[in-house]
Image (cartoon, rainbow, N blue to C red; front, side, top):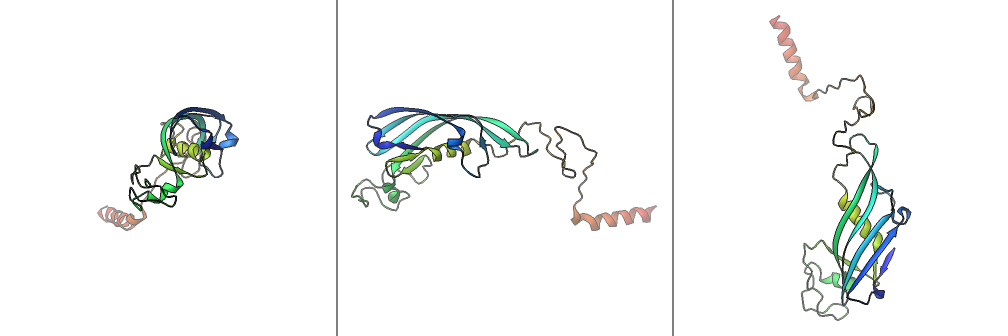
Length: 194
C-alpha cells in the first residue's frame, strides 16, 4: 500500500482509508490485527516536503507476558510525521552542510533536519509506504510488558498451570544454589546445639 505523492497538488489534502487486516498484517509480528485499520490524515505539502498529521485506529491481539494467553488491545494513536525526499538523506546527520548542493544540485540539502528528529522519514519514487507507517505506529503503541489484566497471576513455574483459570497444588520454593554451603553450616550448627 503506497500513497502516491505525485497526485497531491493542494497545500493541504485530507486522506482517509480503511484497510482490512490482511492488507496490513506483516510476517513475524508480535501482534495480530483483528479489526479493520482506520487511517485518517491531513497531508500538508510544501514543494517536495510533506507532513502527515492524523490518527490510526484498530484492534490488535497480543500474547500476555504473564499467562501467555491472547488478549485484545484497542489502538487509537495520533501521529505527526514529516517526509523528505530520499536525496536529502545525504545531508541528514550533518554529512552535508546547509547550503551545499546535493547530487541533484539542490542547495538546501542539509537544512531543517536535526540529528535527533525522529519524526522525519524519507520517501523515494514519489511514494510513502503506508504499511511501514502503520507498523511503526502499532509498535509505538505496544506496551513494554503486555498484560491481559493488571491482576493476571500468570502461569505456575513448576507445573505450567494458568493461575487465572485453575489452581495447582504446587508450592513454589526457590532456593539460591549459591547459599547451599551456608545452609549446610546452619543445619550442622543446629544439630550441634541440640
